[in-house]
Amino acid sequence: MKIEDKKLRNYFLENLSPAEIEEIDLQLISDVELAAELDAAETGLLEDYLENSLSVEETELFERKFLVTEERRKRLELVGALKQFAATATAPPLDLKSKAPGFFESLTTLLSPRSLALGAGVIVLILVVGLVWTMYRPTGGLDSEVAALNQTDLADPGRFKDSTNLALAPGSLRSGGNENSFEAEKLTGNVFFRLALTPQSSPDPVYRVKLLREQKIVFTLDKVRIYQNTAGPELRLLVPSRLLTNGEYRLELEQGAAKTIFNFTIR
Amino acid sequence: MPKDNVLTQEDFDALLYWFSPDREEAGAKYEEIRNGLIRYFYFKGCAEAEGLADETINRVARKLSVLNIDNENKHITYFYGFAGKIYLEYRNRLEKTTVEFQPNLHQGVEESPQRNEHVENKHVCLEECLAKLPAPDRELVVQYFSKEKKEKFEHRRQLAENLQITVGTMHVRIYRLKAALKTCLERCLREK
Image (cartoon, rainbow over all chains, first blue to last red; front, side):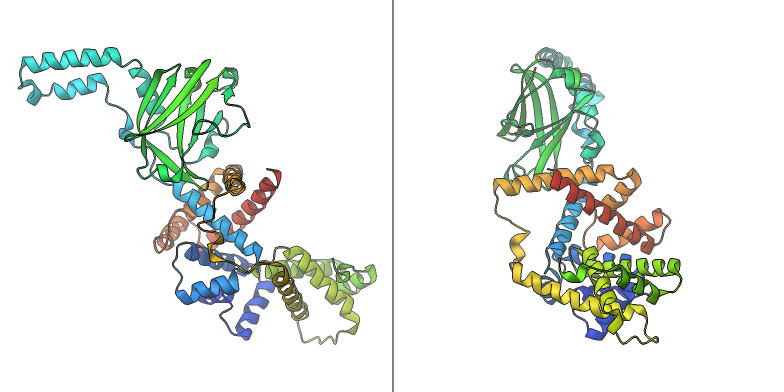
């Protein structure tokens, strides 16, 4: 016998008559199928509480009658964590436009018929600017490669458990005790970086990321988004391990004028 | 554990015979009732649902000789009566040992290194446990919890439709997956 959802919710809130509670109790003991229905009702109640969707009266009953055991508080935490994880995991992936326009792309745009109309002088100027830009942009090819690599959806860290994971906090390594260095030979494939950010530092969830080795830029990546997890916001990044040879490294996260630095060593 | 949890072989045999003179059928009935009692205590929010179910069965078995058995009543009725009493005792024990719930305990909690470490561990464990699930199950859990408020109802209906199952069947899957995740999480957090 199917019991309506509202009644099941009121069962948890102890907002039914003793006879109605007994009816559900007895059915629960004898009917295995009611368990999934009750679980759905309980989960719905937990979700509504977390989403502030319960009425004042329901909230009062929830806190006074339902949330009376440690076990139920744990269930509330689990549902909260799952919702938070799921919201992050299903968020839109990295902005596909994050790849910085290459020199020739910029040039093609500028050499459109409309631009040509501006005259040869402008073209010469652009070529000069382009030449200078190319000369002083040390790793343009790497930028594109890393940008393409990071178009992967990084919402589910479980997908990268076979890669080397480096969890960094601003300043140094977050995991690994007092170590802030890593052996190059242990890095395999792509290294999965997880950079912990403080909640206050992320009003705009898009960063420009620079990796520097011995103070020289290895690559620059624009419009890198952050992910939310239960511990707070974090920026995730895939870096080919071949780029991480022995040396002192710095990851710089720029957001407007603000800069967050992550240092580490590869030995 | 209270002495009610101790059961003699004689009591147990009498209980099985009460279920059915056929030993195999009696065993099946015993399992059915025990599982039903575990569900009962679980949904009452008890942490030790299995232990409380066993305590209920043991008490019934110990009192069987003095119970006024009416063959018109189902076995379940007797167990339910004892289970209700044991649940009340459980709640009374909790009230004596538990601090009253404060709504802000789980939200806006004060930052501390220990709490941050706990939250971080929980986050890592959840990811590890989700990663252990087969991909379709993981995807189902993530999709199921991905929407909020009114939007989630239509989303879940669509989700079930895409999986070509009923919403009820989907709830059964979510129920089992959540139970597996909870067990995995608890084990993982103990090991951290």
